[in-house]
Length: 139
Image (cartoon, rainbow, N blue to C red; front, top):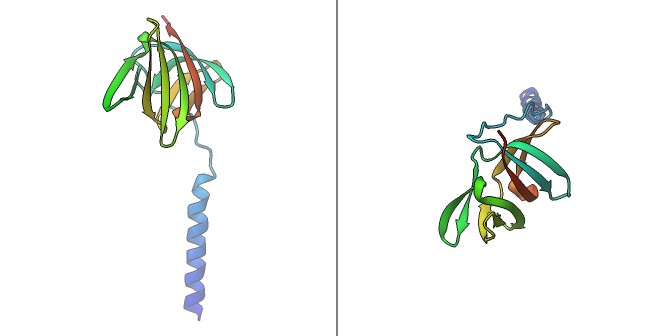
């Protein structure tokens, strides 16, 4: 009987200790250093707008997605704005290019964008973004 009681107590303590691992704060958001410094205005799905510098997509200065069956990358320097629409397990990105052309690509919704605002570092998943307007490189 005592062995069963001790075993139950040990199991309970294990569950409580493992569950407490998520109670601490995540800490500072590390921003990958992109090769170029792009400034953007980002609007999230709740219509909160923020201006960011050192903006990147997974640490890169281009968007990677699928156009039909092909995988493509579009450099930020060619993009004017991007509108994001959540669809199942991916995001449809309507990319408006600076030359007036537009195209739609599919992007993994779990990918992150990063940037630095006047109030701190920002990390946001694509599925939480509504629109990005690119203003160009910052010197």
